[in-house]
Length: 212
Picture 1 (cartoon, rainbow, N blue to C red):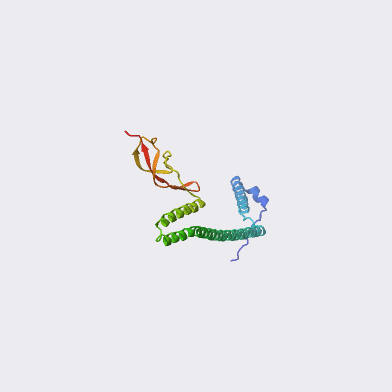
Picture 2: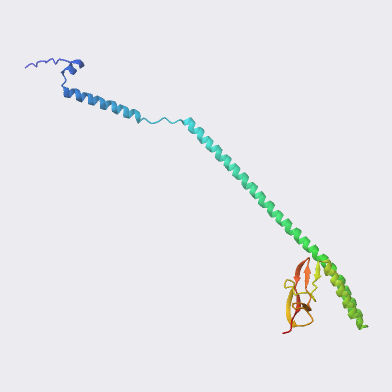
């Protein structure tokens, strides 16, 4: 049995639009809007193009600043080490200078007291034949020694007859006396000395007080 061909009429878009129902038209409009929204979202989500040249320039700038900071740090470190070395050398020079000056001062003082030793030897040598030589020799040596001390800045403290001064006197005994005002030094047990105006050793004294 032979098949029959059926001719299907082809409608244009205008004819389709005219033949569409209101519901179909609404669905068509919604579909079109969704397509437009999808296209908009896709266009917004496109990745931003990175400026590679600017990025490289910024990296080079940071690298240059880092190298500069490293160079400055090395320079400061070198200056610090140089300063520390100079301070250490200066300290050593000062220590040597002070040690040399102390040694020279010691030598000078020893040379100053050598004549005292010479005089003592002379006294011992001649005291066997004349007893008075010993006493005279000791007095002479004592006077010379006091002159040497005075040249070095050492001076004796005058105490007897003076009012007791706790800054330069040390009371070893209090004695009752009507002849001396109260708190007057009446006797000196051990002489005191000052060195260049400062107390070297206090004088040990006896101090008077009124009789009860």
